[in-house]
Image 1 (tube, helix red, strand yellow):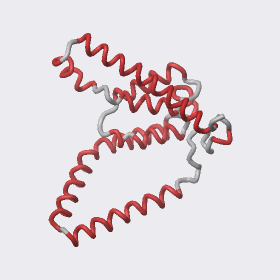
Image 2 (cartoon, one colour):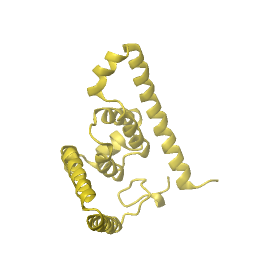
Image 3 (cartoon, helix red, strand yellow):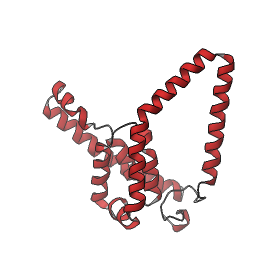
Length: 189
């Protein structure tokens, strides 16, 4: 990818390095829109509005622990992990090591996937390959805490075949994502 497609942090992320100004404005519009919708709902149907707010509060309490964990990871990465380390383990020259780190990270991650988007976006902005983001997300389907139950209902051979196929498919998906994004940024010939 040419240097003209890289932002100021050196990543291949096509979004402009605007310092988040546009993103902050969008966030404010979204928050304001949600507040207006809830206010309108309270006027039209107070019972359902209260139920919706209760459901939103319950969801917030459910995901709060994973958000704290992800925030801690992002903080740790920002202060302890150098750009050189990200380039070595997750960057363009990471090779098989990058795939192994992304696979392990995906398998070991827990909680709702959207809670991990912040961490992945931060790593991507700091040089993580797009294909490795796809590998990470794909391997989240492998749940270690559920493995004993999986083995209880299915045999070891089936589990090994399925999990092995999922890991291989994640690598294929990562390669395809990188190829498609590379083709997309340089345009059709």
